[in-house]
Amino acid sequence: MSGGRRIAVTGMGAVSALGAGVAETWDAVRQGRSGIAPHLFDGGAHGPEPVTLPAALAADGFQSALEARMGRKVSASLDRFALFALCAAFEALDQAGLVGDAVLGERTAIVLGHGQGGQETLEKGYERFFGLKSPRMHPAMVPKVMVSGGVSAVAMQFGVHGPVFATSSACASSAHAIVQGAGLIQTGLADVAIVGGAEAIATPGSMSGWQAIHALAETTCRPFSQGRDGMVMGEGGAVLILEDLERAKSRGATVFGEYLGAGMTSDAFHITQPSLEGTAAAIRQACTAGDLLSQEEVLIAAHGTGTPLNDENESAALDAAFAGVAVRRPLIATKSAHGHLIGGSAAMQTIIALKAMRAGLAPPVLNFLGPDPNCDVDVVVGEARPITARHALLNAFAFGGLNVSMAFATA
Image (cartoon, rainbow, N blue to C red; front, side, top):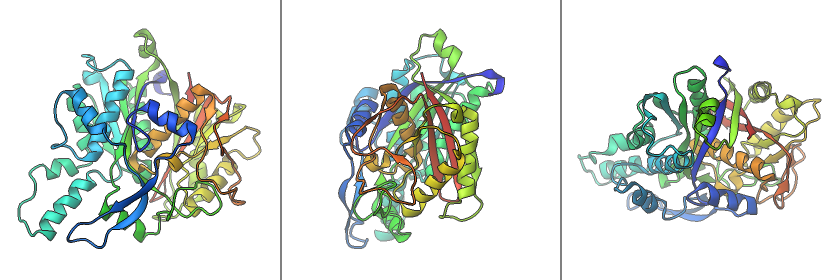
């Protein structure tokens, strides 16, 4: 690592279909509870017939709780995805003991990942323009739609004047955000980085688009299972506070884990189909950065979308990266509980992996119908499994062949 700076995780925040907070989210995945349910998606008077699809929509009440905590209304000026980001950031900074910290300023960075930005605002705006033939858009439409709306909201709320930007690389967005935030600390441009991602694209128009590419499951998400038939859209956000380890220790912060490094590759192959070589290369790079192949046990927090092609490719890539190395590798795939948060997924799964290692329990993969002979991985099923792993490998793979694997250790 550049300059020898080690990167601690000192705060975590989350909002999803499993709850408006990390504790609720962790309790749900540990106990094998799912946030996936049938939902009606109605495109309105100018749209097609409503359709019912499985989805994992965020728990009710998060917005009112956020506004009560902030002491002001923000819902009119922010799209739902930015509200998720702000909610998760509030919890993470509070846990890290940094809410109201006057020293955040120029030595703090924010990097958040989002796949699409303000989709709900965009669809409502198009309904107004094309459907109702109104020549006037809402005056807040552009700032609510822009992908950087979330990071800007967090920066303004907490007085962050350092490097602030968004990453957008589909399902790898928050993984890229975490790596970029860690890099800013390692190169000395920041001492603290607020990183993660959020997404709110479970909207009628967006869901129709995902249906068009045959990506959505008809019933539920079954990662690495026989009979799996697609992903389930989720929504929410997840944020981690990364901090220079020595700084964290000097101020008496609780350290929940350590970022060890990452691998990042591009398949340069196909817009939707993954490449075994690119995926395996990212995993190998992360294993090298975190010295994972020398460990007795490594927890695998899989990308695990539940699509036939992705899960098979990820399994093969793990086998290739760990070939001939006797490391126990229990595998978790929590999209089966909270759905696919797209830009927020990697951050959410990182938080769950850190919680799992600290608790010594790997949460089960839900909806499992039996092993797929083409997925030779140790899937945790049934109930939470006791583990001794102190290191985790986190995978995030995106359309366009954008691959990120990260290595973490628990404190």
